[in-house]
Length: 167
Image (tube, rainbow, N blue to C red; front, side, top):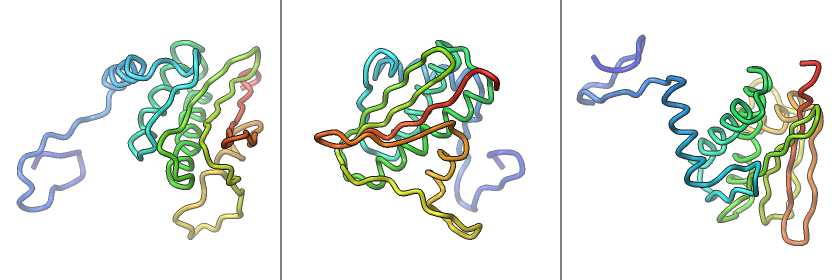
């Protein structure tokens, strides 16, 4: 049966073609996202508040971290994961139609900001092993060197920073 190794398709599913991940394909998706939305290092990128925008934000973050900033694989991986968490929170919890993504680099630090029109503050709650959601801010807290929220007249910016020296 067609599919990923070690998995089976349900009966009657037909012979679907399954795309496999590859660095080349990921670069193509990232380049397409940069063409469509622009670079979040140059100005705030506005993305629709849809679940699939998390993938776009991850691709943009990966392209910036790897190509522009040339961060280590660990810093890139953490940045991409944390971007996904902040975007997921903006999509799920704010009721916004769009949100903004901005990435900045200064000596020794990278900073990622997600802006949305809600003034509701994210809340870092303790999580249990059996929890199926609510781990996003815990990951941000554990993997970033610092994070926070800046209230704006019409919304907020949730941000994290990662030290790029000594890693």
